Image (cartoon, rainbow, N blue to C red):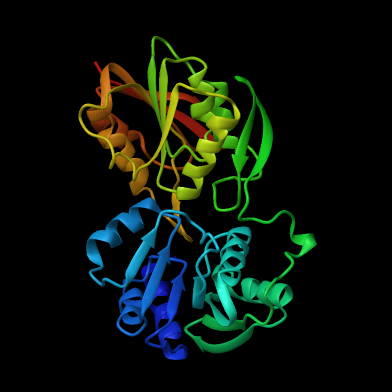
Length: 354
């Protein structure tokens, strides 16, 4: 969601909500610092959940209110009850359903769930879903093609709509066939291509060349399929992702396949690594969207900083959409680089240290 959209959504929430000095408030995103601070100035406690490791890390340094707590789990456990919950409409309807489902189940009976976001980002659909699942969801206000709606929790227990599929806050397992073998992965809404193996990753797996690599880093590991398959070929593999749901799923994938030579960590690209971390291979199917916007800065950082984390003779291998122009960035970062494979949709790029 763009910053301007966050500001509009924040204004809508603040204009249509009130908080008691003894109340506990749940906010299902860390994107709006203004909202967090404004609520914290009034309410007794404010609990923040977010899917992004980097967002929570930044907020822990920035927010100084003692009554604000941050949680590394993406969804509340249900052990704490809230007076009010706020969900900013995320990208992906299934993930939106997961957020509002976890939020409503964390409310006290009589508590209010607020859903806010841009119309083009799925606000209308998620508000309609809330009405279907909970029996009520009333639009309160509009502003600049955004809307805010409220659902009051009237029952102690709700049934997840059967036609929506499995409860999205719970992990599911998929069996996926690849050129490197069949593997079972853990997945759930909020993780990239959570229902199937995406074409870019499949294309990358078809072309993998290991050479003498003994250690590898899988950046943006998603539910862990690349790193888990690499582990059968190498001494040790590290999987990392900024998406905390992806980290949780990758850990479950590693455990499901009884892999003992792999480590999964949360990291914003290389933020949790230092110069002592040297890999023979860094591999990635990097994202090029943040929320609803296309961005290429993540891939640029993966490429430009890769030499600092590669051993001598190490390689960076990544798959990207064919239309994205990363060639010049690769050439600046690596003395030797090029395109290994290319088709109409994707290209596999490689940079090699001397």
